[in-house]
Length: 171
Image 1 (cartoon, helix red, strand yellow):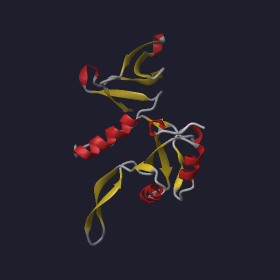
Image 2 (tube, one colour; image 1 turned 90 degrees about the vertical axis):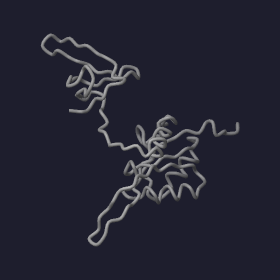
Image 3 (cartoon, one colour; image 1 turned 180 degrees about the horizontal axis):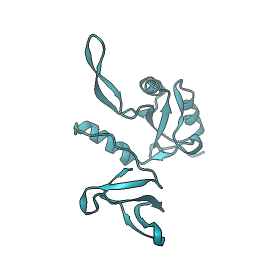
Image 4 (tube, helix red, strand yellow; image 1 turned 180 degrees about the vertical axis):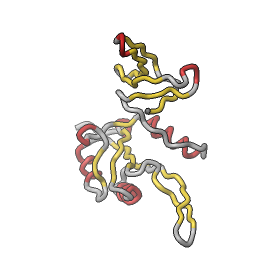
C-alpha cells in the first residue's frame, strides 16, 4: 500500500451538536488531526454584566484537514458531539482550500462583514447594484457556471448571464 502524503489531505466540514464546536475541535486536536474553527467576538449580556465572548462563525460546523480514509473518518465520527461530515448522504465533500484560506484572511484582517443569505440553485433572486439593480430572475447552475436567468413567462423565452461580479439576494 503506497504511503499517504499531506498533499492528498483536503478540508472537510463536519457538523456538530449545538454549542459543541469548541469541544469537538479540542478532541480532534488531541487526536492529532488538523482542525479549523473560525471564531468571532460577540458581546453577550447577562443580567449583571456584559462580556466579550468568542463564538463560532458558522454555528454547528467545524473544519478538518485530513485524508479521507476510512480510519480518519471513523476517528472523527467517534468524537462525542460530531453529527457527521457535510455532504450528500453525510459523505465527506471536499472544500477547496482557497475557501478556508479566504475565511482565515477575512477574520485576520478585522474587516467588518455581515452574514449573507446563500442563494440556492433554482431560487428566485434579485440583483443589487450595478446596471442590473432590481432585476429579478432565477439562479441556475450549468456545469459549474452559476448564472442568472431572466424569463418572460408569457412567451416562454429566457436570457441568462453570468452572475460573476453581481451581488444577488434571495427574494
